[in-house]
Image (spheres, rainbow, N blue to C red):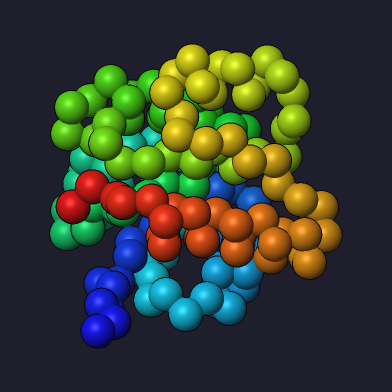
Length: 145
């Protein structure tokens, strides 16, 4: 008997519209039903997570894809806030950045990121990276309810 998974909710924190389109398109090839919310800066992401401002009716995400270089509050500040808050810290956070700097990788893990992925440059590689993320986090890993 196959279990039909519930729809997954992804919070994508990304200020680059091109990357947002690429990520959505890469995920669209999946058979898993998912919904996206997009925050375009760090403050917007925190407003979403704390159901402030225009996000009073928000759905708590199952997973967060978080860029580092964001306006207002950077990804490290957002990650630190998420991982030090008992109400949010169980949400898996995947750092998705164009930086492959060892300093950024180390800092992300020091702040308890669940994973660090360097954004690929071309679409085929982007699609492969998203497929790997999806296979692991949405099919293999057990996410908190």
